[in-house]
Amino acid sequence: MATARKVHLTTSDTGVYSTKPREDAAKTASELLQDDMERHHVFFNDMHFHNHIVHHMLSIYALGASPEEIKAAYRRNSSYQRPVLPTKNDVVKFLSDKGSFKAALGKEENYPNFLAFFQNEIEAKGIGAVLNEYLFAGDEVAESMLARLFGGLIHPFIHLGFGVEFDQPAIVAQALAQAAVHGDYMGDLYLFLVEKAAANGKPGKKTMLQLLEEMRADKKLCASAHWSDGNKTEGVMERAPDEMIKYASQFTVSPDQLEEKMMEIINLVVYYTSAAQRPSKEIKYDFFLMHCVNASIFLSKFLALPSLDVKSKARLLEWKGRVDLLMYVSRGSPELRLDEVTNYKASKDWNTIFAKSIVHPGDDGHASKLMRALAHGEDVSRPYEAQAKEKGLLITGDMWLKIGNMAIDSLADQSSDMWVRSTGFDEAWTRFKDRARL
View 1: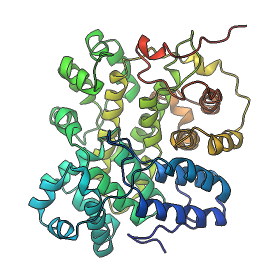
View 2 (view 1 turned 90 degrees about the horizontal axis):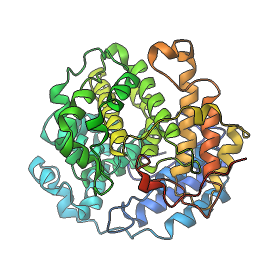
View 3 (view 1 turned 180 degrees about the vertical axis):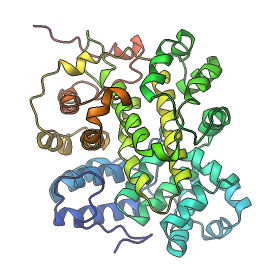
View 4 (view 1 turned 90 degrees about the vertical axis):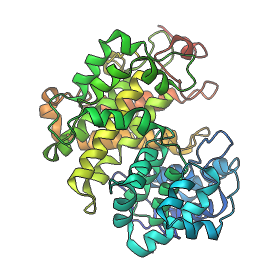
């Protein structure tokens, strides 16, 4: 049985999208995830690059990986992890006090302390009650934690998604501890400002696609991120804060729009990630935009949680959509060429795509997460195909499989970088090969 201290997968723990996970693979993945939790830190270097083992193991497990394939992926990605930091029981005890909790936030050395604390909290109260108290209660602690959930290129959000999706309390505890040691700059820099300007919880009158097209027509906003910016989201908010807030605040979600707005988010991030290509260069997906796709798979699970009220679900969707809009602008507002997708020749089915992503020797989990999120997007989009134009959904029909083919084909050349970083800038493409022409 899965607990707040023990990872235990069964073949019924398959997440929102899976092929046919094997029973022996569930055992292997459980053991390795437990080993990861007990032996490794949340960051694998001093620059706070994330340990992706949880994401990787669960993704390839869901896609049908064998025990041997899971072990091989674990060996590759555990080789460079930092060892776990010591847990300080006196600090864990003090975290029960809200003032001490707030003082401990944002400090990397407190990750093991927060992990132990949230394990205790989940054991005592259950996942739903803990999420409501520490993310959605609306008090100072919950607001700070919710902002931190969207920090670090939304890795805490992704980690939480995996824990909730696969019903693993220990991974939920990891995710909350991870959020606690991130900065909360996304809240003060952007999300709280947008929320203040928005009519939150009101019906969204514009689709995500309409907002993106209006943003793309705004020259000041599109030029607000600079290649030289160390943090390009900060560059946007420094040079065009009013413009970014104006558009993002128009993305609102009412209680009766949860499903349709979820679909807008999924469709839009897949659209701008796949279509942000340079026709003169080999096809590559943007590393940062790809995270928006990888995080989208969890929205359907969050919306299905009985412990979350409708207001919290709507707010979570609003924040995710607003982060997605900012992420696009921060990557240099790349030109979007849908014909790159529609003209692509798909030669592989989903099972072939999954199999290649499972064994890719350079993958730390990003590729397998991407393929799974794309296939999930295709699945949940089907009921909306007839209303695609009205709902602002550009990715339809066989385009999903074409996008999956583009993604896996772009990773085939192991002499090339796997991802382009900040695709809207000319400088990002200089290291990539010219596209072959017939």
